[in-house]
Amino acid sequence: MPSRQQVVAFFLIVLFLCSWHLDQGHNDNTMARAATVASIVDRGTLEITPIHEVTGDKALVQGRYYSDKAPLPTFLVLPFHWILVKCGAITTGEHGTLNDGLLRLGGFLCGSIPFAVLITLAWMDLRSRRPLPVNAALLAALPLFGSFLFVYSGSFYNHLPGALFTVLAARAMLRVQHLRVGLWSGAAFLCESSLMLFPIVWVMQLLLEKRWRPIGLLLLGLLPGLLGMALHNLAVTGEAITFPNAYAVNYGAMHHQYGFGTWQPKAFIGMLISDYRGLLFYMPFLIIGLWTLPWNMSRRTFLRDPFVLPALLLIAAFLTHATWWGGWTYGPRYLIASAALLCFAIGQRIADRPLERWATLVLSSFGLLCAMAAKMTISYSLPTEIQHPLLTEVLPRVLKGEWTTGQWPVLLGLSPTVATLLFLPIFALGLFLLVRIDRSLPPHAPVPLP
Image (cartoon, rainbow, N blue to C red):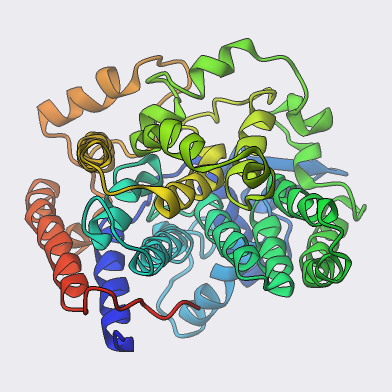
């Protein structure tokens, strides 16, 4: 049985790799969350009116401005920012304590840590099954590093913590831990309101089997998340069931059914397969699921699977969303939770065959090349109107050597070029160490699952 130290070492290596780049860009999405954190610390209120001009992602309620984001990522960062302010580590500027350091802190807590936990969980799950087409550490790391999820690690977004809590809930469903399913689902809902779809699907699956007690436990676990969201809604909009984005200033589509339920024919190509926002393009490992999942799932298994069915239903929902492209983004960011669920589902079923072996290595390597190029240059800031962003936005910056300043070694005085050149061999060394940790374990020794 592997030691706790080996699991911690695995996690810390991944965390180091995915926190090398910490986002300090003034994106509307990240600034909206950071503005709320700063407002609570500086003025003791959720209202961001005095600094609302820093972001376009805001709600206007009775003449007052608020962030239109779900609350949990904000409140995860809040105590750490408060401590830093009270210790004098953060000085007040034009916008109070809202600064680039707060963005980097949010990126580490809500981007890097959830991403590292996802890879560690994937490794822990893969260790429990044999044989695998490639080493378990590589099979856990490459698909996720080689995807649009990696680009969002290190950024103060809500999608990665939402995806992590969703995966934890789905794993709890497999382990018949229904109270935990509800608790994790509530946490995911507090990160991203659309993720409420998942516990609804899981309750329906339990209804099909007439399992009344598990349904009760799931709903009981879900209650804190529902109450937390209701209180936040009440504080912002004055109505427990009305979300802040119903009052979004710059996105009128959100005022009607929160943007869902309209026919969006362009989304089917654009959000699934194209190099614009295509899920299969920006997480190519999922292509393996096109044959792996159907070969290993009967109709009955599909209807009861806690990973695949909910993931596909959320994808279907966003195919009807008025802003399905997600604004300035790398890949289909609204589908990060679905992508994580499908990745874990494929990991549960992938076979030790040459096709799967080569497909995993080739597809993940292509995804890693694309994600690395974006991560090291423009990150996720790919304009909405650009139809081929990797070719027209990312590649020219790579060829010109326009590397991002959002790397922590740059804060220590290194140039972006030197920091980027350092990251490449360090990343390769990190993968090597992950494989060494995995190979140091007995061939059939599982990692103890939480």
